[in-house]
Amino acid sequence: MTDVKYVFVTGGVTSSLGKGIISASLAKLLQARGYSVTIQKLDPYINVDPGTLNPYEHGECYVTLDGAETDLDLGHYERFLNVPTSQANNVTTGRIYQSVINKERKGDYLGKTVQVIPHITDEIKRRIKLVSSGNKFDIVITEIGGTVGDIESLPYIESVRQLKWELGAQNCIVIHLTLVPYLSSTGESKTKPTQHSVKELLETGIQPDVLVLRTERHLNEDIKRKVALFCNVEENAVIESVDVSTIYEVPIKMLDQGLDRTVLRKLALPVESEPPLTEWREFLTKLKNPKHFIKVGLVGKYVELPDAYKSIAESFIHSGAMNECEIDVEYIHSEDITEKNVIDRLSGLNGILVAPGFGSRGIEGKILTAKYARENNIPFLGICLGMQCAVIEFARNVLKLEGAHSTEINYKTKYPVIDLMVEQKSIIDKGGTMRLGGYKCIISKNSKTYEAYGKTEIVERHRHRYEFNNKYFDDFKKNGMVPVGINPESNLVEIMEISDHKWFIGVQFHPEYSSTVINPHPLFVHFIKACIG
Image (cartoon, rainbow, N blue to C red; front, side, top):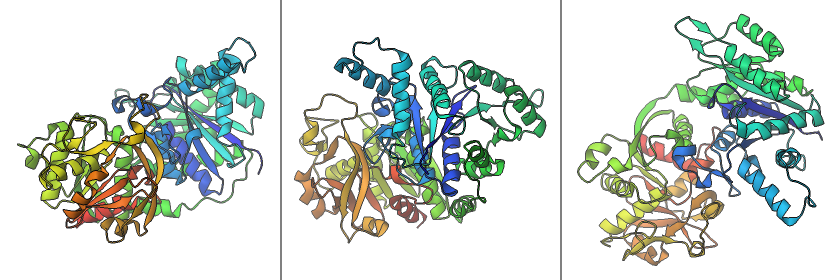
């Protein structure tokens, strides 16, 4: 197959309807039918990437294996497809304009006036096609961020209009996701918002090929027929997306609604027998029929917005299903933990995870949490800053290095057990300058970490500037907190483990970025196993 097919997913009426989940679900169904599929996200904000965005603004910053800081939807894409994404899978308006302005500065436009059309739209189209260069994929699904009608998303919508005209109806289709609200006062589902949203899309020159209607309640055939008539869409191309208990049910619901069959038919691609989705269904069965129940504390400083820890939350779901265990995750603000209340706040938990983060706010609460888990033999997983807090706690209370700290928090500390990496010391810019992406790690065989992975060499994703200070390597090892994972090129410590503890592991990398439905991350799987006891 030589020609790449393109599917664009737009949203209307309101944001946060779940374009990313619909895109990932469709991709999963097409993949199950034997097509090679990828998904990309076009984000209309002017930041070059989400790396400098506050988690309260944007939720989690997801990191790809090749070191891109991206939108959290790319995490959904990977979790559903079990295929890594890359730099090309997330494009922002900032990146588009940066590229065009750089070309203008170099004289690439030969003195022409640089305009949104054609220069910005041409760059958007180039980025859309870039992800499929070399015909690696049969189908590229592109999610357009924002809502149709937003000023900032207009260049993307115009680019889609041009591509539909350039590529033809059988090579490029548009799925429009809208809301059908239910009014309890009248007992009716209302289609008018969808009609207006499609009208808005038509005004930009785009006729949607498929409509996906988000709804709290099932829609009857009369409503679907009405939407099809008023929006000029085939009846069998009006798809219901009703609320479900878990996002992982959505592919099954979309399969039942025939979304994948409709898309393949419109793209003039063969529609073979139904995909069995055996592993996916087995996962859902385990998820809905747990044999165990545990309570795990997630200690962090962005807990008011659970999306800040989206990949960790999803990793709990994957590893919980693998262990046939329902996990009640209690989000605990690290600023709320003090020496006086630490026992009250953390007692009754079967396990504790100290989350990643940056800066001094809430750090002492994380250090106290690590101390509580260590002293009470409670399974503990520290991620990135979470590992660093466990190191600081051990240095202060076991090695008796009073005031030990990270130079990120206290650059004058007498015992800098966590210090800035040498190559980071001359860096001034914040965006895209951390240690990012996949790095190798060699694991010691006589460790619980090795029991989890079952191999000595791994590659995990990083996003940080500060590292364990190897000056203290022998002191920690001698006293029972053992560096069991080392980067072979830089000799940097990647994994710390307390050898005589039930299960106490801190990792400098982010295992949550690599956990998928089909392959739950082994550290999370074994952490939950230890919590079950």
